[in-house]
Image 1 (spheres, rainbow, N blue to C red):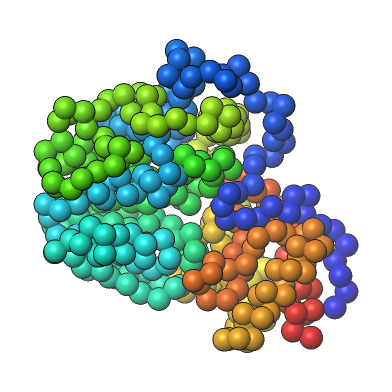
Image 2: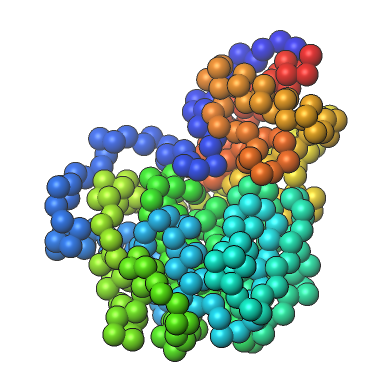
Length: 377
């Protein structure tokens, strides 16, 4: 097969850290806070600005708390789990690697007594209609390693007794968050908005705050997990007084992305860009004879972590083809870091978040055919 002539303008299709916004430049960052304390007036103002701009773009209800926390999305999810789980039975829904990690935390670290883990294979969703909402439920909104997302929040009961604890790291900003159906929502800067790593965001509904302040698990909590101060919510966390020292350069980088999002039309524009990327890939996959989406249900296909698997290859042959394709595309400067996640079935994972240009997805597609032909010849 002849090698394509046109390459994507940007070959960064990694699913995390993800591509910077179009036109990104370090020169655009305000460096006035570098070398300053994050607890200075200017430092706290910058951190509060990240919180407020994020709230506004996401359309978060005014009675929710939003804070910047350590250790990326992982830190945010684990803060919620360690502080809140215990008074009710818990159900962890697992359909990919990261949700599997939350199940491991619940089983082997928290050692919860009344725990149900509902697990299905990559490409599928659990039976969402069977979820018992008298339980606390931990789930990912979008499976970053499987490319399978929940289609909406309709399956979550309005009169739920338990908390809906949602890891939304590869969904927030690219997918509509049904805030009235959720109680804890977490994400990281390095996904849809293309920010730098190490910082997480933790959003709490009034129900989540009530649980946090009324339930004492008796567990010892490390400092970076502690959200209470003298028995009450530490409001400073949700106003820009972070638990530990954040990178102020990463803060400026985050603000740059948020301002870009506002400049193009906010949440609706971000969602539209990501969905356009899925539509471009979807059209091409429909005509492919060697790959398909890992997601089995049309309604659950992710628009961010778009995962493909082989139709004619399996086992060692599929793994070998993936390895060779990824190497070829990297060598050609066409696509970086698009191999399937290490625990997932062999295939490709192409980031389609809001910072990706649809024209780059379209330019990539002929190269995928070329790389497959080269890898299997």
